[in-house]
Image (tube, rainbow, N blue to C red; front, side, top):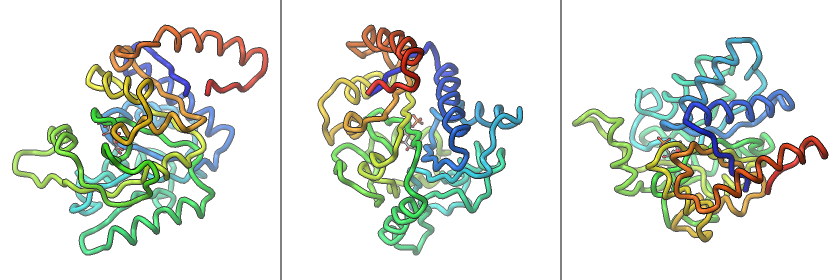
Length: 268
Ligand code: F6R
């Protein structure tokens, strides 16, 4: 696992955007896995800014979002489809038909939608680069603690902690979903590269468990230790409980000289 520690949330966005742009320049027909939530908003703003400068195009890119709430329509402003439209899709040159969210409108069978979603990912050759945030309980996507490490796209009941964490986003009296459809942990691990972003003190404990704890379904993000090309980009607050942060910084310094000497080099 590559662990990159930068100063603040802005630097996390700048660093992550740089990685994504480098990737997209090499592979304009990239298949991106995308996350919603507070953490990637600054990243999407940065990507939109780079697009507006004419230095990036999403024309040939295809996207798959990690998850979506069940019980609200895609057109609902609280849906993850709406989030993506607002923060990225409507601001860049991507055709809506190339953007995928595991939408499950009322009346549809989530199991059918989950299987179809997996097939769509396979049909385009899999995800090249998956962006992840992390829940304070260690979830990735909506794979809550105790999710099977072999799970695929399916329905999950959100934990009370996740419902409470997300409650700030809903007005009082507004319907707040307690179910979601999410890519599984095995689905995520099949992405060729993974970029997990975390900022703020409230993520320090789950980041310590994910990076330095045992691989366990109790902390779904710890499954990323099994993925060869995972990069975790953290601000100092999110990294504040890591025991080995001095080593990660040292590795990154060494990394620069390794790249100079050998070209592309990954700290796995
Ligand atoms: C959202 C998602 C979630 C979030 C996580 C962190 O698509 O997959 O796993 O990444 O809940 O959310 P924020 O960034 O709001 O702290």
